[in-house]
Image 1 (cartoon, rainbow, N blue to C red):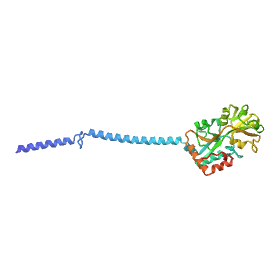
Image 2: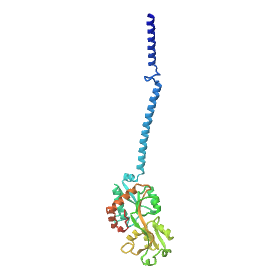
Image 3: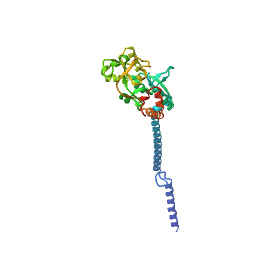
Image 4: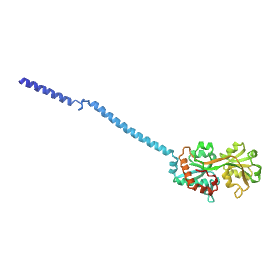
Length: 307
């Protein structure tokens, strides 16, 4: 009996020691897995959290960068930030010209002021070399070209253009006492023309193989004819109606042959969001009658294009 009791106590002591050894083994866990496996699992979870957080931050940074890029690409944001819409023009009555006090007025000038006000900025006018208008835009010395600009292919390919807002044509200017001599294109072949460099008038002179001398502005072309240093000029019909003939500063000149038919538009930097904003403004001002009212003020109401 004593032997059986001793044997039982010995066995119980062995089981107890085995259990204690198992619970204190650094390589075991309460679930039966090793602590190394647990550490690996915890490390993987931490790595996953870190990667997830990093991905979230990266995505956020990318979104912010995209937003900044969009803002940087927005001409509207750029113009609003500086508070001015810089308008590239030449002296071109009745579209852009100075009043007695030296302020820029005209159909284009007044519409530009109204558009600038509609987007919360001020219009600022800068005279440019017409031949360099695209360079001026791309260099951001101006924000748009708004000066009775004909929508020819070269302009539409290099600028973001508005919808047409005025009809126009290129017409031939000659001394009034010689009007009867020049009634068709063939009769003009021997004349020497003055034309604004880079203009639609120059393009017509080239298309008709006319001999011509380039000048800086259409008004300069009129001066050349009036002075007798050019036989004729090619200018916009809207300008001719305002500046040539009885009751104007060039009463001794007249316009004869109409060389083409064309439309005016406003040009912005390629891809500019201002063009769409101006189209909306044109549509609204046409609908409420303010465009027609402005056109009547400068005598160009017959040329307005429906918006």
